[in-house]
Image: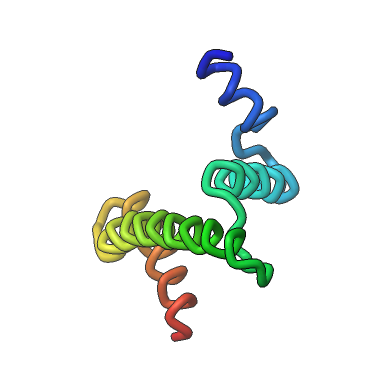
Length: 103
């Protein structure tokens, strides 16, 4: 099986962001499923060998989330730029980060 077949199997049919929230929600679900398949389950089940593997998966997942949050933080730095599109993205990212912080 070549890489294209593997990716196709993991991804299935992911459509670009569409016109409705339903399309966006489905895309997010697809991405979540792909990440879960790539990294693996993270919830412990009370069995040592399984939980050891899932703990490693959890560490990988948190590293990924850290990278994603860093990307969002960099976008948030544009929240005071005069270019509309940069400012809009920056405001959105900053608002998201504030929400995570509970502000």
